[in-house]
Image (cartoon, rainbow, N blue to C red; front, side, top):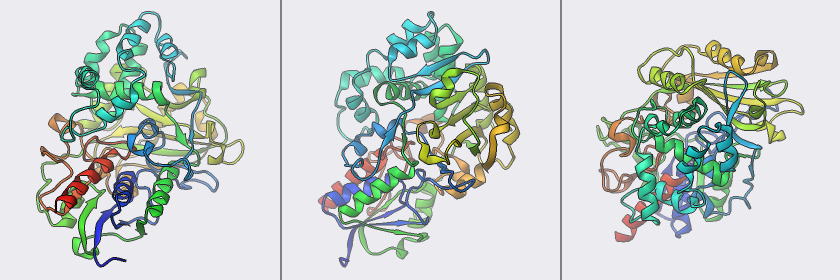
Length: 471
């Protein structure tokens, strides 16, 4: 080992691993320290319920992962990452047994919304379909990093993206289109009236049309394992089972890159109250199920979809998200569910299935939402409870244990509220840099934000490289 490393990365989540890979590819000596016994952070796979049932304790479906410019620049397929696609990316069933769907086909998606809104949907996405590569690179970037690749289309997208989902939904007349849009916007974990929630919805829709919403064969761990393998190929080292509490516990290095929450970085690096104004958002109540058979959805489309959103109307979805933000107990939750075993039989014993679901709850909430979650599931899949072999329940405290970056159980590592929606973690020319010239932040608290796409790590690595090259 060299007397001084070029970079030490703290945290082996997708962003930490991506940052480490990109620095190692530039010929730097890099070492990664991870508190967990395995790499992965928010992209892990474990037997949470019964032997042979492989669950993703955090993220499961990766529309931004398959389309990530950072991941596409690495040979992850050669290292074991295989994307699997359900026949439908997303189904959004309604109480009458019908469903809106999101698929690779714009036409199929538009027709599922009904004749009153099919044309409006086509017009909404038409300027951007077929341009994912430049759009993703521009949207999943940080403004300090030069001009966008396609300034005209980026500006046009930005005009739509900055809108609240409630404003964007005024283009539609029917409840199906509005419900689908509200459900997509719900991934921001903010009320649909929040700034840029329309952009979240539009980005997820475009990702489906371009690349689908796939799951990795074997679970989300496959993403992290492929990144770790590539890092080792580049000469990088990974040390697991080591919790870093102070900067002086780490080996000497020219740069320290943290895939942690801003709070943890400030504590470890001795930066005092540098991020005291950073706000964390509401949390989730997540249940992983081992099932004796597939979910008995009333809507046929839901049986063929990798992801299923459950919210009978845009109003109910917004009310559920608003309740979580306002600190209220969940009553009728909006549910985001995933059923990876319909396309990946390696995830469960033959004939059995794994099922992943979460609803939104206040930060740090300590209640039990199992009953309200399952009541909502039964509305759209009568008889669901009869299939349950085992469940692993995780409210905010448990989610924070699973991933230390989820402060208060916030899976986005930061609230989507006010200026913080677009300026994370605080207003700065280089958001990855800190008051300490050798310390950097690369977690999803930095641009472009949450999701398993590695782009925060990608941009942070560029900031580190520029600093080291100038030294």
